[in-house]
Image 1 (cartoon, rainbow, N blue to C red):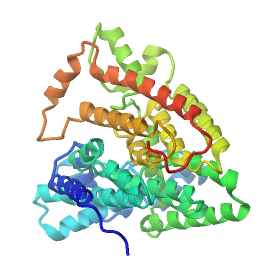
Image 2 (cartoon, rainbow, N blue to C red):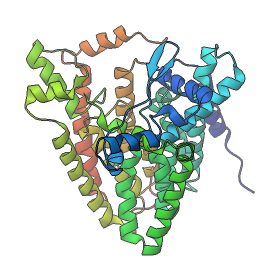
Image 3 (cartoon, one colour):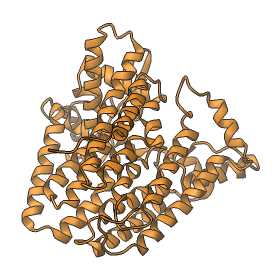
Length: 456
């Protein structure tokens, strides 16, 4: 018989649940309106045609232009626009995320057939992230017989994560629950299930690609050809199930095109506080004079000013960081299983620092995985957790409206950013550079193997 939970743990779990339930109807950011539009359109008009034209039209268009069928997969395709409450929208996120929002839309449609209760619609869209948070908490709780409770509560009561979901309306905990499950499977040597969950995570959110280097290292370091085959087959099966609403109705090519649309963004570090946010601020300084407020910059404008397209050096830097992390992980496996979450954390922050398409929430996964380091025989685990959480909280709070629409005015945040003369967001971006340097330096000095039993 399992021992009963201490009253303090029960109270803390209840507190975290209460905070989340009370905030379910929150207005969040403007992205919530986009999510509601996708959810409403999917629930009332179906999923199939939300990305673009049917496959037959795309293939016919390619033939008329003298191109082969492969070109349809390699080149951007026309996107489908739809009207929702007087505004035009298109979908630029992977299919699994649209399935989640379809479910939210169907729930809302059952509860409010007239689609006229906005707070209820907010709550319906925020319900999946709440369930994702519960799943993450359960996974962390079960991750260790001695430290699982501490890990779970460090996630459940983390202010950065409470701010992200549900206050600001991000869907990241849905993706994060799958990403965490994938890392736990890798730690346990369950390679085929890990590959399947990585595929599912990638079909939910583009950042699922950040799990691929760790998966590849483990497969190459520890797997046999049978493991590779099982991983490929199970991953293909998961992809087929997720994409079934599109391939079964003849819209698969448009859905695949929609999944890669985030790769074609022309904005430079849109609210992601990294080296390109600093570079965009320097461009504004050069054009407008000293101490401007940083704003989102278009990549073509930056290229015209700087004389180079930032995407190529960004990709080369990220490739170098990825290879370094992969080599670091290779040396620590198979004994150092604890290094797997740390490797993904390093990968996440390398991308968030160096990428040109980084948004304000793109270090979310690092904060979800950081509790797995607590309880390991590594003195920096708690500091890792605190610093990654603090950066995510600051990036979200400063750049997307504080506590969300209806709770804090954007003007207050602009005034806050100007208090430091140099835009506070630029200072935070510079601190992010220092944070990533510190993360990598500490990781390189970490022991080759560690285990539970030491206090963090």
